[in-house]
Amino acid sequence: MATGTAITYGPWGVVAGGSDGVGAAFAHELASRGLNVVLVARRVPVLTAFAEEIRAKHGVEVRTLALDLSAPGALAELADATADLEVGLFVYNAGGDDFSTPFLDKDLATHLALVHRNCDSVLEAAYRFGGPMVARGRGGVVLVTSGAAWAGGATLATYGATKAFDLILAEALWAEWRSSGVDVLGLVLGKTDTPSMRRVFDAKGEPYGETADPADVAREAIDHLADGPTWIFGSPAPTGGSPFGALPRRDAVLAMSRGFSVSRADDPAGPTGT
Ligand SMILES: NC(=O)c1ccc[n+]([C@@H]2O[C@H](COP(=O)([O-])OP(=O)(O)OC[C@H]3O[C@@H](n4cnc5c(N)ncnc54)[C@H](OP(=O)(O)O)[C@@H]3O)[C@@H](O)[C@H]2O)c1
Figure 1 (cartoon, rainbow, N blue to C red):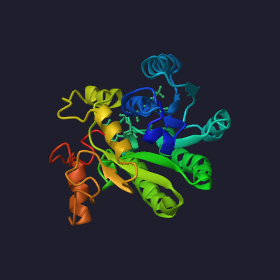
Figure 2: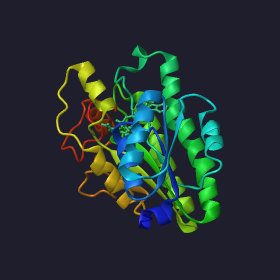
Figure 3: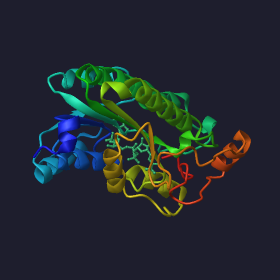
């Protein structure tokens, strides 16, 4: 059944990174509101099984595309594979970093692949899918970013820098598109219980601590899609500014490097890099 969300942002939504974690929660949320969904991820068996789960539970149409968003050409392939669909909502979710390690401990190719997935492909998604939305005069774009965007932090260099890119991109597009009927939201997350987050903590032998539930994240984000430019999940002031406030940048960077944690709500990223 078409709900308000499907009428405003349907009939199709794309979730880039849509087979587990926060992306899977977004897929459930969109489908429960009557949108058909295109799900993008790399692992075909996980993607196929998850697509079947969405079809069975929500009775919507689901299209899957196995793509590596770190690879050049991925967004062109996605645009081709969805050229026959009216995509009214794009959620760019894939973006976690499974390796929260010092900058020089990762090889250069790993850094560059992360930048491609978290910056180039995000920009290309906004360009390729946002353009038709603006022309149509309706639509929504959610770019999932992180508290790691608030300041630089040791072991978070490339990840945090890409998340800052996503945050600023979302805010700028919100400003450009707000009068055209297209809602853009930069969604800032703290520690959220996903397979990706668990891999990071398990590798370090650290407890997960307090985490957000991906289903709550997705529901709140879609409820507040029109309340951009930025939504900080779990914050007492979700449309507010950085939890570092007026701290000198040096202090903010040192706090981030210590894995600053006031509460889950205000935790910029946790010590994880997810
Ligand atoms: N979880 C947290 O604590 C946390 C905290 C702050 C911010 N965030 C942000 O929230 C978002 C979601 O995080 P998450 O923890 O759910 O994990 P994630 O690893 O970002 O997302 C997992 C989903 O993305 C897909 N994916 C990952 N890399 C991909 C690639 N190169 N190409 C295509 N698909 C890819 C995965 O499937 P495949 O592996 O099969 O490709 C899976 O469907 C990210 O943007 C992350 O930065 C998360």
